[in-house]
Every structure is written in structure tokens, then in C-alpha cells.
Image 1: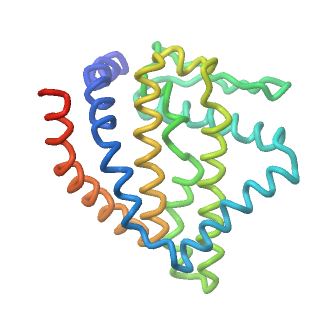
Image 2 (image 1 turned 180 degrees about the horizontal axis):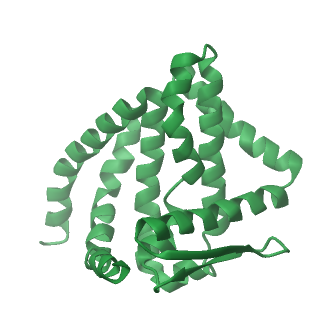
Length: 225
């Protein structure tokens, strides 16, 4: 089963990359349409600032270990989602990295998933609407969401570098396009969810699609297609 799924994913390897590459102008433009003068955004931003402040106070080594754990867990989740058997997670004692063996060879989605999927933030998103309904201190809910998104951003900043084995395995060009394009998407989706939860995500995707329809003909004309 996993071999067929990997073959299917490989067929869409570069089409996905090209889609993300062509979407970058629309994604950048989409940030101009967010209202950053709201209590929800202030709480979100406060959570992000709190994360980086705690990282400085507690020490980056402690947070780096947690980042490695989330990195390997994300590999594991996407291995299972693409019908692969995931082996045990191993964390290097010196905190320099970790590993997770995938039976069946794996695929680019498994390899690059930690660089575009905020696992802990996504799990929190599943319960966040309920917390907003039952709780009174909504700003705390948004603050913790901002904390988790900052945790993801810090992980990306720390783990994306030229010697990263995952990036080398999938190639610098492909990995760069996937990581940059998908993280522009993720950042926009995070802001949209913080604003209006799942309805905000639907509206954001529609907005990006609308912008793509405006930008893509210009991009095609520019490259002479």
C-alpha cells in the first residue's frame, strides 16, 4: 500500500512545488488584509513574545530538546498517514538532533513534514474553539495559541540550515520552495484561525485563491508561457 501511495506522491512532487512557488505573491499580499489591531491578535502576539522570552530565560538547550521531539513526532505522524511503519524515535543525548526510522523508504511528505506542519499547534486548534466557548478568559486561549505557533517558528528557524539531512535528501531547490511557500501558507492560516477559527481558515483560503487568479496570469506572461 505504501509503495503505491509513495508513487502517487512523487507524481505530484513538482506540481505541488510549482503551485506553492506561484502562490508566493498572493500569500504575501494576503497579509495586508489582516486586522492586527484586535484583542485576539494582541493576545496571540503576547504568547509569541512569551515563548521567545521563556526560551531566553530557561535556556535554548531545553527548548531545543522539545523541538527535536516535535520534529521526530511529526515525521512519525506523516509516516503513519502515508501508510508506513514508523520505528522508534531516538534523541541524541547531546541534544544535537534525533532520528526516526521509516520502513518502506518513506517519501518527501514524511521527510519535509516537520518544516511545514506545526503539530502541537494543530492539536491545540482541535480543542481551541471549545475552550473559547466554555471559558471566560479568551485572551489566555489566544495567548497559548500564539505561544505554540512561536514554538513552531522557532523550530523552523533552528532546524532549517544547509547541513540539515532532510533538506539534503530532498534537494535544496525543492526543499526551499516547499518550506518557504508552505510556511507562508501556515502563517496566514494561523492568523486566520486566531481571528475566526475554522471559518477564518475557509475565508483565508478563498482569499488566497482569489489573489492567485489575479497573479498567475501575470506570472505566466512574465515567464513567457
